[in-house]
Amino acid sequence: AAASWDEDKGGSGVPEALAAAVEAENLELEGSAAAEQAVHEAESKRRREAEDAKEALFRSLPAQDWRDGYFVRTDWLKHWVSLDVAEDKCDKLDNRPIMSKYLRPDPKKVGDMKVVSKPSWEALKSRYGVHEESVDLPACHLCKQSIIDHCRERKARSDLEAFALQLRALLNSRPEPRPDDDTAFWVSKSYIKDVLAHREAPTAADPNGLEVVCSPDKSLPPDFQDQCRLAKNMTPDRSKRRLVSKSVADLIKSKRSDIPLFPVNSDECPICCQALEAVAAKEHQEREVRTELKKRLKSVYEEQHLILKKGQMYNLVDAHWIEKLRLFIQCTQVDKPGPIDNSNLLVAALKSNELGSANPDCWNGQRLCYDPLDLSNPQPPYVWVTQPDWEYLVSQFGGGPPIRVVPTIQDKSEGCVRIEVNRGSQFKGISYNHHIEGFCEPPVCREAVKIREARELQSRLKYENGTLSIVRQSRGTASSNLAVGATRRLRTRKGETEAIFF
Image 1 (cartoon, rainbow, N blue to C red):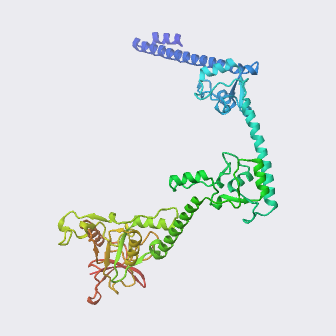
Image 2: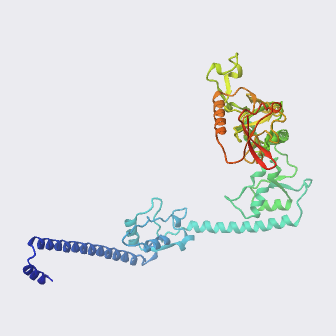
């Protein structure tokens, strides 16, 4: 090809510049190919050297004499062998899983370890490092104390199984002794269950049978607690002790002489008896209070909706406090709620003329930050309660301040649509969803009134797809709680229809 090129170059008259450029490009391509070949050869050489080194280290792993070797985890060796020599990134040597608590090789885990020679162990340590909490485990230093402990554990487990068989046989052979049996003994009920279930420390609930001994209540004064600990009387809590026969007590004494046993006529701890009586009286009182609250405040507890009636006064209570009251009634572990707190429903009057009264101290200068007469919100942050329910709540919990609402409702103004409040998320009925007339103590703040008026104006200008009826009210049936232009859904024979009153 070069000869033909030279002939063509001489015969065809190719420019010398072009011939030089082609010649230079060919030289550059040859140089890059040579460089790539050199890199490839170097990488291949490095890989062969790494493979040879790993192969040599692998062949040096077996120890000539196992007493001169060191233990390594089997799973670590398998992971090291499976790695690619190009990466050669392995975790540090970690022998903690095969170590005993005495920092020696655990004989119970010989299936999880391999013996390697000392040179290979030193090579692995220098290349990959050792975990800071791991130690070298010479093969000649198997932990003898671990073997002794294991034998003791097996012996104790065997003795416990035999003890459990004897105890179960005695308990099943005769009925439980009566309290008037002078030969019976009280023993910890949890200890009996632990023995029958073959449970030892630390999984046992009462390994030493101390639940039958009185332990002072932390609510007692410190001096009473000290007296109770020194006396070491029998606990008055019968749920922690069991009455057993004399033969069972003798068997327990023969196996464990340190287990406390009390004769059947032993006296209970008088200090703890008083404490238990006080706790029982308190629980009985709280149970009666919960029952009375559930009975008196059934509509509030069961989240029932309330139908507003003509001429009645209602009170508002913060919804968060009502939720605490419901939790107290439902759960015995929940503490009694504090005084009623309606402060979240009130806001301070910003201007003196906003009080609407000649007395500047009227209602402590506060206003309602919500309009309770606006029924467009199905889940407001307050709950309506009747006046008797409010008086009962104040007598039980105290607090306040009172927020009174008196809606003015006409008898025949709503037709078949009832005005209902306390409508939760599960309410599926048809109710009035607009503003009604009435008065509140304290009055509603101006910001809430402006928001309500703007929403009403927006709802009047909004038309939804449906049947729209224009109804003119007669003078005799004019409703004081229906403003001019207010909309309301009416139930008719053909279904529901939207009406605008003017």
